[in-house]
Image (tube, rainbow, N blue to C red; front, top):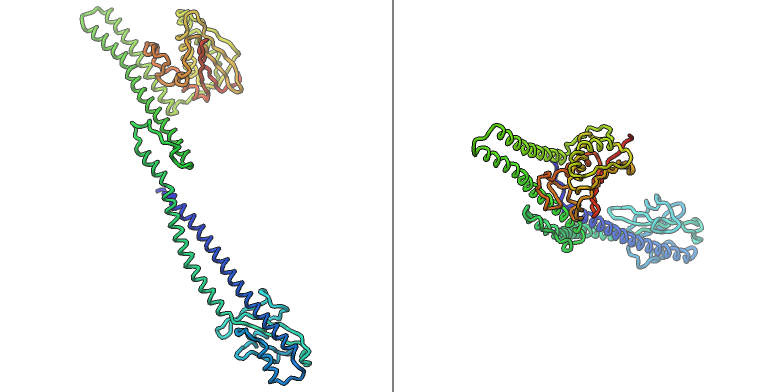
Length: 468
């Protein structure tokens, strides 16, 4: 079973919540780093102050100072830095002085001496559960002739700073989690509120039934992001309304077109049975009925053909077709009828060939030609003009009949459509001929159009051409 995609609210909430979480964590990390660097700089400043005080004390020692006084001077050399510890030793490692209670012997032995105490040169170590930050320096002196170079190890305890940073991290985690939860909740509420126009449009859509296809959404009453959706939905409603209308008209037209021949058959049968008749009279009635049967059969055949076209079931069997030759054959076929109506047929233009289904193309040209003859007044000329446009063969059939109003041009290829209401159901066809022509042309990858002026009406067909 196909899994349903996550809702838009969940997607937006998770996305925005993740971004907010990352931003808060990054901000907290930057703040923590800043505080830690501040503490390190404080320690470095303190260590440098201690070293400077020791250097000053060493430089001011009198020669041949007694050991007791030396310890006293070095113990008093540093004041105000109660957390600092230091150890002074000779070049050979003999301890000269160490802060009482301190244990910097091992650190002084393993630490690499540095020239200057900075953030990058101080080290951290733990001793007896306490954490220190410190450094080892080597300084020159002329107060100890036996050891002109002294080693000074200085350190300061940083447990207070570390405890503060650990507490800060705990607060930061709590604040980050709370802020993320609040941000996610606010985001979900904002997204839910932001979807309110969509829910309103959905409610309006649900109200539209098959009998209310004339209702339209108001694009100007929805947010900008939904204008395209509302416009597209209105376009779909318009297409559905047209389809429903055409389907309703189609059903009415079918009923009307079938009612006429059925009524004729019923009437003629009733008349035939009303009294005894001769065999010849019954034969005439049966011939008359046969014409009505043929008319209904042709209409049903045309409707079946259009139904196949609607379902893409028309499969042309392509052969090379000379359109001029086909039109000449049709001129011969319709010649007697045209002569009877005093209509002249004329063929103009160069040879044009196409790959197509011969029976379909013949049917399309036949419908266009018979339609032109039907609406051409006596003494008029129907002209079939052939030519080539780019890669297409062109066929134009022009008749000098009454003009078709421009508003009807777009609908004349619809089924049962007749632009002149006065000529509807006149017995000259069911109004399916042009719809069949359009289906055949489109099945061959072509196009058909029509234009009408006071000088006449022209149907133009373009079909992919081939070499003759």
